[in-house]
Length: 245
Image (tube, rainbow, N blue to C red; front, side):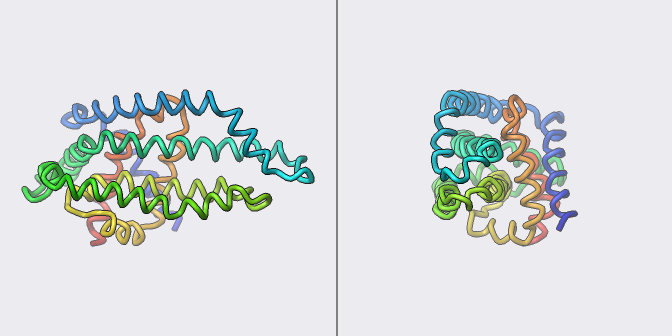
C-alpha cells in the first residue's frame, strides 16, 4: 500500500524531469500557457471571494461548537482551495486537451523508445474527436456522481470536520484519472476502460493524484501542474497501467 503510494508520488517528480528534456520541451509550451492563464484567474477569484466563502462555511457551525472555530478555519480554507482549484483544473484540461494528448504521446515515445501505432496516438485522437469529447463528458459526469455525498458531508455540523479529508481523496482520485487519461486516450481507452486499470493500481493512483493536489495549491508551482501531470501520467501508463490491461 505505502510503497504504491510513494511510487505514485515518484511519477510526479519524473514528470518535472521529463518536461525539461530535449524533444519534449516544445510540446510543454501551450499546456503551460493555458494553465498559467486559467490558474491566474482561479487565484484571483479565490483571493477576492475567500473571506465571503469562509464566513458562509463557518455560519453552519452551531453556537455550542463556536470554540472550535480556530481549528476549523484552516480546515475549511484547505477545502475551499481544493474545490476552487480542482474546478479550474477541469476547465484548463478541456481547453488544452489536444495539446496534452500530443505531449503524452511524445513522453511515451521517449520512455518506451517506440513509435505509437498509426491507429493510436494524436492522429487517432483528432480523428475520433467525438469519442474524445464523449470521454471528457464521461469524466465530468463521473466526478459529479460523488459530489452530492461530499456536499452532504460538508454541510452537516460535526461531520463536516472530515470534509477536507474526503475532498482531498476525491481530488487525488479525479486528478489521477484526469492526467493518466491523455496517455490512455492515445491508445483508444476511455473512462469505462481507464477506471478498472486505476483501481488495480489504487495506491499508486492516489499517491500520484495526491501530490498533484498539493502542488496545485502552491502559487507559481501550480502553473506547471498540467504539463507535469500529463508527463507523469504518461510515465505511470508506460510503467504500470499498460501492463495491467
